[in-house]
Length: 215
Image 1 (tube, rainbow, N blue to C red):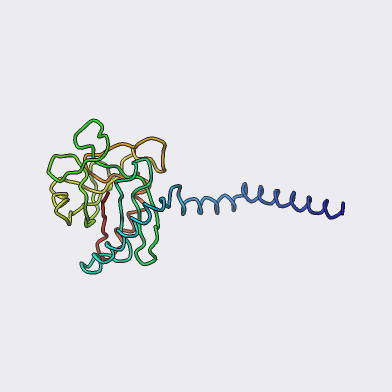
Image 2 (image 1 turned 45 degrees about the vertical axis):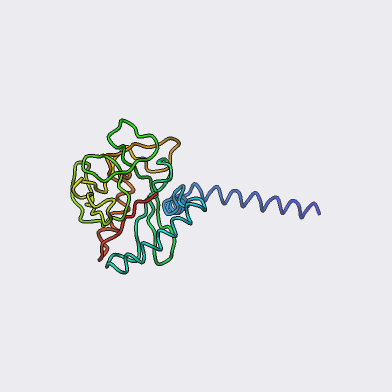
């Protein structure tokens, strides 16, 4: 019995040593970093938000198929979620799963700091416009890489006129944080790193990608 216990404890010790070695080895660190990159913190929202996301994705799929948009993938931004949580989702419409997620700003409506949520579509309002957007061509704007946005609904059809675009800003963190993040003048603004992840999805797509901003 003593021999069995000794052998068992030795196996546990050797297993812990192996795990520690793997964690600190170059190969282990590489694999762990890749896994962490693929599954960022806050990747999956709670059940209520996920159900709403799935319903919106189903509508986006139908719209894309009828209007010659990319029906394999879309971007969904749920503005009802807190700004310090991931609420910009890259959604795989074929697998019906979230592929990636990141932080995104909402408009401050020309206030120093907007409490709660307010939406608008008039030029100069500084608010987020709800609705579906066609993501257009990339260009170099005031904050670097940006993508033109064309509003497809009555609630956001002045987006191009308002210069509402998809771009990044260093004030947006790369991961979820404790407090609310910065606010924009109406543009859905993401972190620099997240925009670089969105870039190939947009530029390599043969058909336009839909961005749907909702609450």
